[in-house]
Length: 414
Image 1 (cartoon, rainbow, N blue to C red):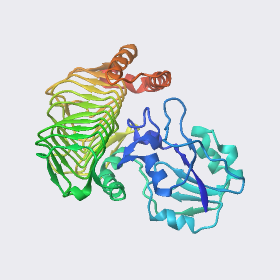
Image 2: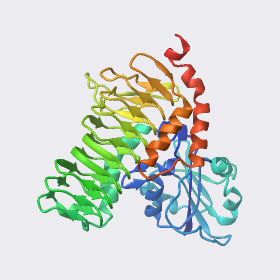
Image 3: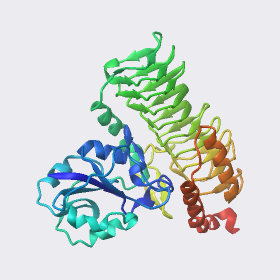
């Protein structure tokens, strides 16, 4: 039996950009928490190590120090992009040591501590270490998040599964004139507030309102839905979504994943989209998530355009993106980290490289020092600070994406 868990990030993390530009895969919001936390809860094992990229690309789980294990103790190694499922039970019945793959991707392994110890602390080099061990390999039928739209597509089911295993009950302040449908499927944490005239509708799925969250009058929350700690819902209809901590949300939001600390304080529709940390969507910013011909939506990933296979898909918006009033985003838009868009009333380009500046007519490079200064101000308004690691990661990303910006039509002169 395994005695500890190790999570790692494999080399396919760029395929989840822009969501992984500044965050490792285990930290990505999904279901009722994030990918790493879901694995910890699924296997209920102490966490030995998390092997991801360096810099801000880290995941800091809650919990105590890593366990001290004897050399013959078994470690369960999990690719954080894989999702828990019946395949794990099948893998546990095979003798260790063993490596488990799905579609050519390493998704898990079981091996003794003495064999894995030399690989601890290798970060992004851990996958190569694991591959070099020459473990007996077995195929499994695992569900693996390979593309950013799968986070959006699979999220409502993950919310429902996660909340079904948790407790329900009203611990916060729910006004007597708030409408609550299916209270047996709702949890309101201590310190949360739901005002008169708000609606919690759990008929389609469970709802959790996090500690210190506020749901103002004229807000309808439709399950499955998770509202993170300290988030404020300011009116409108919000449903089938994961909303991370510290957000300010109004208007219509459907089937979205908000990483946290983002703003959408005004009306406008955002649907079937993923939004990075510290994004700010100006009033009436709207995402298209359905083509006029009901065809499947294509998305640009890593310089190539792929068919998502989805009829409904909005935008994938990186961290620190800001949109001006009336910004319109097309189906399948990919807006790179740190980009600013100010072309209200016009459809934005379907793809913008990180740190792009779009004024409605042309694309130019957003000045890095200006971005950093603005980020410091935005974070200070929520009593947060831009750490030294944050700044290093942002500067590294800016340099790494310079070529992509130079290749944009308005920058290259073509």
